[in-house]
Length: 221
Image: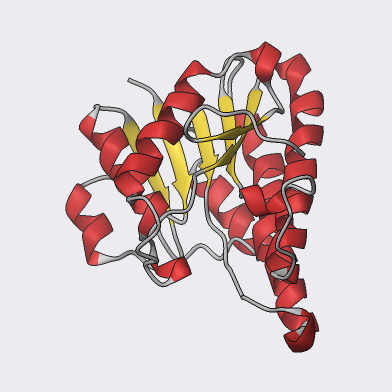
């Protein structure tokens, strides 16, 4: 049995990670700002009241976990604010950078001391953070923040390799969650997480820092 920490665990992809990990008898630490009834019903350990854009809140979480050993950390929490060139919102862009890129980096920095050799760090990013794949423009804040997260993941893979910690940079696919207003073209969180967990389970140190679709396709930067 492995111990997984999952952020953004109260709904969507994070909630589904908790469901599937619990079902396969892994130990789950679910991190969120506010627990949902759906998360509470799963029966995993919940660390709520955690604002990941707050360094003080991150410190409190690490203090709560100080005696624990984390085999895998899945940094899934994120936000999306749609905007095009005509509706740029500088504060919205800054907030997406703060939540989608800086918060995961700071949390990874803080949790690494709890991760033994052989542990895995998974960053749930987006194909919208691929420069080569951008053929539709727009979505400025979200795209830019995910490019930043991808770069952070690449650097983390280099810096953590001597510790024996592998880093997965993962795109779940278009997933029908509240974040995208339950787009009917999206796949289910269940299907996305099946693929994401397969990528995390198969990750080896020699593939650390590469960018993958949940389906198993390597993605361009």
